[in-house]
Amino acid sequence: MAQPIPLEIPPRNPRAEFRSRLEDAPEQHAEAVLAAYEVLQELHDRGVLEIVRGALAASDDILEKVVDNTKTPEAIRAIRNLLFWRQILGSIEPEWFKGIFQAIPEGIAQATAQREQPVSFFGLLRRLTNKDSLRGLAAAIDFLQAFGRHLHSLKSSTSQV
Image 1 (cartoon, helix red, strand yellow):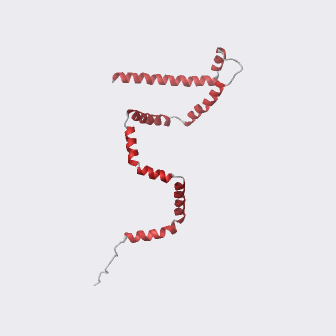
Image 2 (tube, one colour):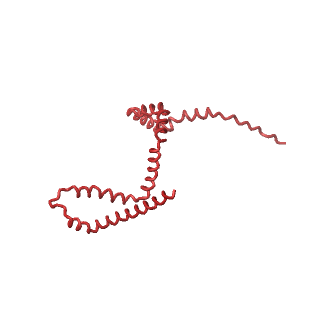
Image 3 (cartoon, helix red, strand yellow):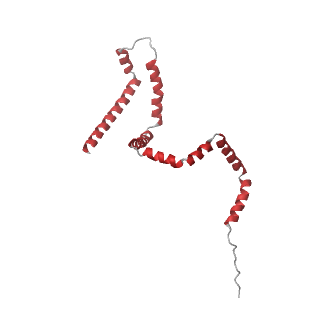
């Protein structure tokens, strides 16, 4: 009858495997290691490592002060407001902001420019009937209506509480 072949697997030595991988690493990753050394040297030259070391040494004190400052009602409101503004700003198309922010310097330049003629009521009325002015007024009125609607809903919800 056939005899079973004894199977003896040598025990795994993870330490030897790691040592072997570590010895091969400089050859396999020489370029990356050199780049890491260069980054480390730049951080040292610019004093970033000293700042990080100081921050780590004082991390408990810094964390304690941050926590103490965020416990205040003002900080809590500020954080809530930031979260609210993140939501609002995220819902606005960037092109709309671009139009608003491009119009600001142009409008200020026109308003502060030295004009030869004094500003008159009829001159303002004539400029007001311009299609661009009417479009801006319509947008401002739409904003004011929405603002008033939300003020009214806010007033009625706070009076019910």
